[in-house]
Image (cartoon, rainbow, N blue to C red; front, side, top):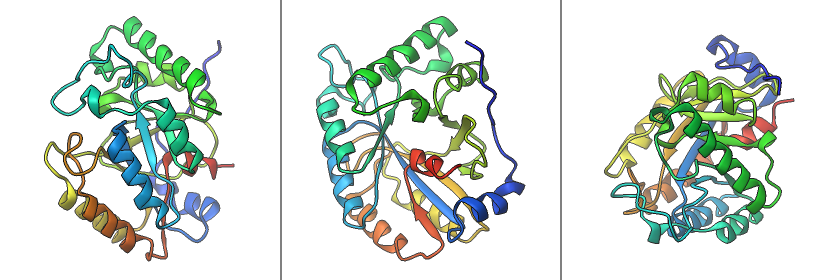
Amino acid sequence: MKRRTFNKTIALGSLGLGLGVRFPQKSHILTLSFDDGFKKSFYKIAELYEAHGLSACFNVIASGHLPNFKAVDDWILPELMGDFEDWNALQARGHEIMPHSWKHLNLARQPFKKATKLIDKCLDYFETHLEGYSNEKAVFNFPFNASTSKLEAYLLDRVRAVRTFGKGALNPIPLSNEPVRLQCATSGPTRIDNWVGSQVDSFLAGEGGWLILNVHGLDDEGWGPISTGYLEALLKRLVEVENLAILPAGMVLDHVL
């Protein structure tokens, strides 16, 4: 297959043009990108978003619900994970479900052949089990936000975007439908309410762009969780900010012509 060309990063100098063309009334776009697939947390997050007419951004481990799935660390535990019945139900309610690897290994530390096999297995499972899923519209969220340029190129020949580590969490708005590399920031392992608030407030005080914060579960679920009460108050505050749109990553890319 001939590899597609892609934008690794679009210069921040293009921000004004991108926002002006694609989001004429919004100078700031925020994505809270929730990882792993915690059933209890994700249903509660969905309720909080729905209370304000918003769609949440959920990224799930493809095998997290299977009987042979083993704990990844102290936070990603089999008994906490949802399954594709849950993910299809949440998607039907208007939320975004995207792939977050087959079994949450650090792909950057794996031999390339093994890493790509795990990637393909994840994408194939999503195609079979998530209703309406297509790789062409998918955002692949690297586990641990760990990637290599070679793995990114491999994925960007298959999916719409990858989310991984970067120098900060600010992205320009893509100006074309070419596959794109998205960078994010995260924090943990304890609760990250103050960190999220600081990141968002600093972003809103700036000129604009697309901020992607990689977050996980609520309260005591996941690495670096957010308090339920804090997220509820944050969303209530942010929906009143006139120049801000709160969107899942795929929905941002849907606005690119």
